[in-house]
Image (cartoon, rainbow, N blue to C red):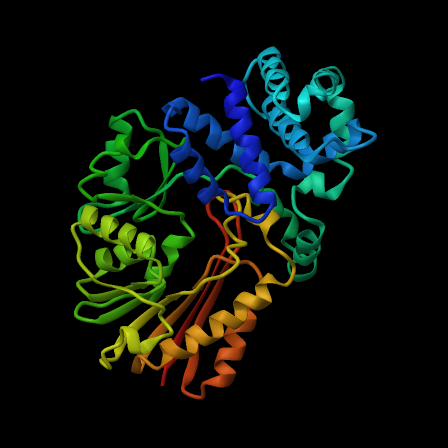
Length: 417
């Protein structure tokens, strides 16, 4: 397939995201609509769409600098994709320009072919000057909306710069080693024997030097290892499941933490999710790990739909949030979210947490977990919960900031007294 066609699909994906759609959903739909895409085409589409959104602040600023009047939005999106290719990929510059111009023949009656050709060639000639000018703008320099950057400066005055630097990086591929089979040291030896470079992060966690397809991982199909962010791996050690306990994993999909619970101890696990397709992913993950749980497709706060009045020893409440901590993996999030979104999701979390608390036995524990760095969903949520529930006592809470090893997470372990 021609590069122009992949550019077209990537530009369409950018437009859909900026109109409010989730990138993962858009890409799934595009691949279903275009079965002719090869494996290489799909990889290129993934890279162009994710990469352009990761660097969108800079790329949009470059377009603004080079145009007195902005062309139609679909032309802007094509320029964004082509500029990403020219600056961040190894694609041959002449091929990128020629294919973008070829695709432009199909847009707006072909009236913008010359403009696209001129702007892309100007970027190649004046790259350093244009970049230096663009990077004077904070949104271009940090590739974050201004409101988001201001939020981080206000709430994380000592850490915001390291956070935004980390959030702009490509995410590492991190492995969780199944403790029922082996540990990080033994599994690293297997990786090394297979020519896969990696380093140990913890007793059962390894970070690869470069991402690879999971089929190359030794014993992946047998469940000896799972792909999971290092920050996400911290949830289950905090919950510390014990043999024989009844544990609820609310909002369980895609099942990474469900599997981790069952690797940790011999538990009776109930896994809930409101989405039947996402719940199927939980089942698939458990099958690969050769583990079992009671799966229910239901809204966790609608207790009458799933709760049998047998209280749980422990609950993992991995509640819905803005996902503001995982933008390395999902760069569309930083352009989809609005300043008021964390307050909206915090209200949704409140109702869910209050319902789940009713299912926890006295003496039990609940782990509040989010993949957010917004205070409204994290520390402030915890404070409000403790105020509402006299029988709730914070045992510990932990803020994991985005860095080179992990995404951003918040955990709070709450005892029911």
